[in-house]
Image (tube, rainbow, N blue to C red; front, side):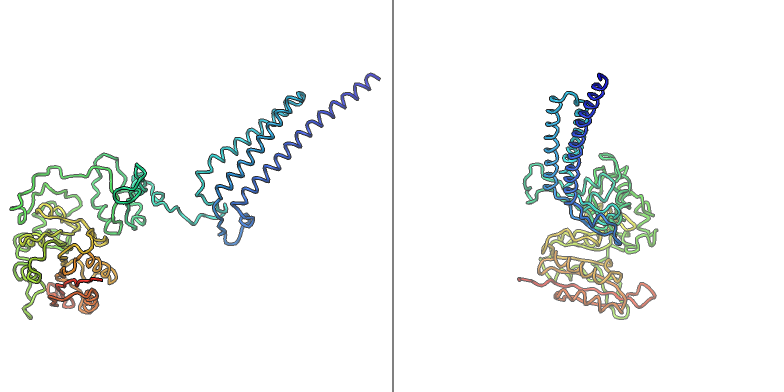
Length: 474
């Protein structure tokens, strides 16, 4: 009888414990279901049910997660779980027999709460993220140019630099917007090599790489935070009264990347096609000194030349030509001659096969290191004269020529002169090129076409003109 009673009491205690365990499990099960439903509701803001299916195209694109709605859902989940934890803790005080079970489940819920809170902390950082189907390869890239490159110096350079005081600067901008040429993205490997250096140290001897980037459209190049290399034994340049018509000291140029290693070699035309556009322009005495002052290259049949003289061009606008640009490949002789007539000329050039920029500077003139791809760095209607010779010739595309000519028109002032000096092309292309110049509707002061006789081929001609930009009051 006593054993029967004890057995019944044991069964009752077991049932009580099982009932308690079932009630706890039921509570946890209900909490799990609630958390699952809230999670599904949260994800539904990011994914449609269709996006969870594999389609034929794998191209379903879903909208970004709404940050405000997501944060609100997270807060609801956290509040409910905290409320249930408080109730469980209160229950442990009343039912000490089930305290271990309740404590375990309380720890479990605390772990879940920690995970959800960590997701909430990440919310602001992913507000601009987009969520795609896991089987779909991303076909869109970041709009940030810095994310395209790996070298940290490029990434730092192209990022927007906000003003430190949080106000507009004197230029009316809220930050500095450094830029690079669009072709830099197509020349990623070369640009990263160019920008791979130690900050504050001597730059690599990579001027040729920089020029390659510029010529191929990576222009402007990014600035660098390294010290530019200089000639090892740089000496003081000659005085201005000597430097104009005297070859500079060879020690004032870095000769890496050139066939010739001194100015005497260049003056003797020792490289031939190394700088074929200006084969004799380092010969200051015999080739350069007579140019634009004495008639040269007269055609024996017509007794005419494509080379106009500076005095006769300046007579077109007496006293009005003061500043200008020479867009040619050369050593600055045009600027040197115009200096004698009190006209300041900036010489645009690039170091194709020879140190043209250094040569112009060592002569006491102003070089402008510029490729044909770049917009001229002058404001509208500012120059009195724009001169070009044997640089834009029959190789140039007609559309590119249009862009170049209209940019020249932009910087010339009303009444300014455009001096086209010995532009050469094939005879069959002459009319097309002349029409390109006529589109500007400039007044013609000089206009001549003569055969180009420096080769046996008689299919090429020279074209020269002096044109005046008209006033445009409207």
